[in-house]
Length: 250
Length: 250
Image (cartoon, rainbow over all chains, first blue to last red; front, side, top):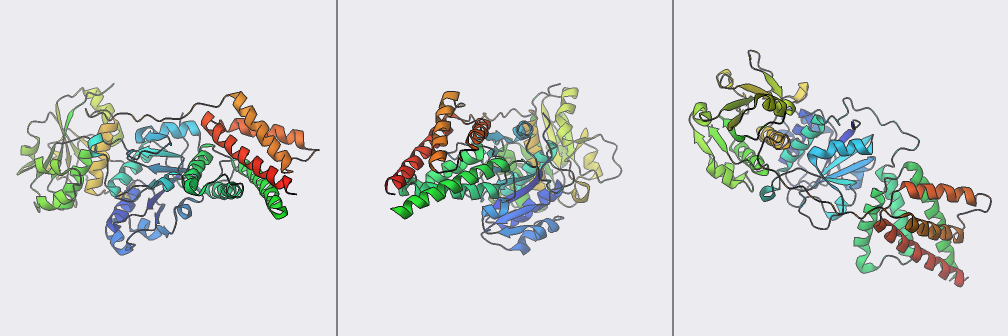
């Protein structure tokens, strides 16, 4: 099944080395990608990044540094994280990069997609990974799994181009009545649900964080449409209201 | 036609920047390649090259610096040069990198192959190109054709691996997921949810039946796994309990 072209955004999460930001920008420009966001870089020296972005200075100029990962991916309908596959406690699908196009074809995703790259030393944290629909693994060999950040971005950008899942001309997202929910809407729903779970005593302090990560994953896996999110949001609002009533009368 | 796996050697011709030698070595190691030769580097500082070859120091150690291109490729049965396709007077076939495997399959080549990368600024000279059986072009976009050397090597090494023309075969990652929930479990979950919605006042008598049908459909569409059902069941139980508490104290 042929996948639909998507608007891809590359997101670097907490990169340490400005030269890697520049190298990533250059690789994007090589394959016609323009949209890069950088989450909370360790050393936000854009001058150095520009110097490494030969021929791609514009990509660096237009890259936005944002404070949180959610700021970077808020309007995306599909979020993929890159991983070496070494971290243990993952329960996301791990797609070998060469199989990404087939997977996208099956899911018929459209619109804005984001591909995340973690920090050079640590990769993406479990919390970052919990915002991803699936994980992509560049099929490196077991005894040398960890790639240089700029090279990893180059390989992924090449594969997106090769597999034909890049939008030739980034068209602005047309909104379909019941298209997939965007991450921002999902996050609002998630926060509402988390609040309800706090109020109802479902979340225990010692396991709260781990449980929330599990639940966010579960929520992403459901592939809710924006219609679903509205319905579920309405339900949560009502339950919240009722729980508050009970609390008032105590 | 499936190409035969080949022994690939990567040859950097007159690289200027030792860091690029290191980056190239790292990319090779990532994809299970070991054989690198460096022809007359401008600054043969192997120490710097090693520092950029994180996890691939061995590839740098065993790389041979040779005086001429012929020294590097003498024993190869197939020599391919990389090009941006900008140089005019070429009379060689230019293969887009994604089509390399098909081309190799047709030619039934076997044995030792060499893939050449030119100097950062100038690429391969016409003399170098004249030693190549064919040229390979990474399909970059027209307004930004020139890639960083380390990134170009990474993309080519990835493609050799992806296309199955390398012996290295990384193991597939298995993903553990629980199976789809059975209808009985879904129905119990649905009844529990309906009860909560009744108690919380979400369902109004005149629209109750229609709303429940809509919600059951939504629930089915989610394609929950049995694991999902267990988690959601636990949540509903807790919310139910809390709602009942509120009711008791009214």
